[in-house]
Length: 324
Image (cartoon, rainbow, N blue to C red; front, side, top):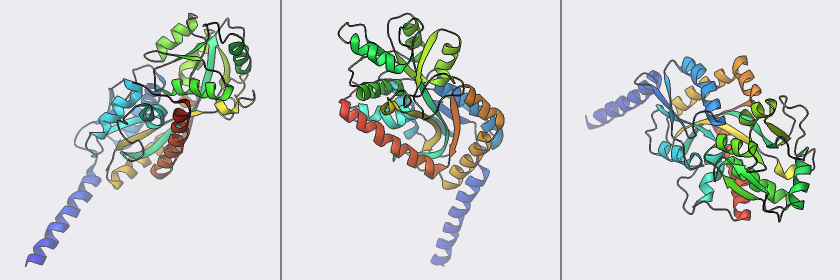
């Protein structure tokens, strides 16, 4: 009799788990956390997939902005959420491969404390300067910076300490042997305005942010950091073409959930995301912003993030970087 009761209890538990996975998502809207303010590159990626993903899974997706600390506030909040499929995060390079390693005490482990659902896109960064700067490309900018290194006029802007824009500048320093001063701002928008105004001399940020500024004649593109030229900027060379291959870098975006998300829900979300990323209009939107749809499943995405962590954490150690 006791054995029979145990079997019944186990069967009911298994049935509940299966039912939960089969019925998800029905209980409530899905919250998609975005760790940056509206209007930036991560917001662009989130909004591009929001509506088609909502249609693919048949449930409302609500954007929840939690900006600050290079995206780590949002990522840390996700670690405290229930792994039930109703809280997701638009992950990107900064908080998942850079920012945690800049702090004395890591706020979370990007490798072990999340469920990786799928990669969305990869995007080259674009190095830009003000339109009247004498340099015509990144190689000439480096030569100019070396000539003016002691003038107090050479610095690079970023969207904040610990962001990918910050580390791109540090990667430039490492590659060129320069020691250009870092000037952090609260987001890409003020960094761009200060660059246009001449307060800073360089910004290396996402194409989705900078390409409109370049095409609008407000900024000059010096190089792209990917392995090939950007179709939106066909006349702008890659850093490798300019002999600065050490500056090569791409930013990733993807979908993650709290650690412990049931495998069935992970697979459902991954399949729905892949369906969205196969849509030509979604691919065109990313391409228009200098990014490339690059779908990876849970295992492959997790492995990609591990490799990115190794790259950026090594740079942080070598440059002895830390954010208070």
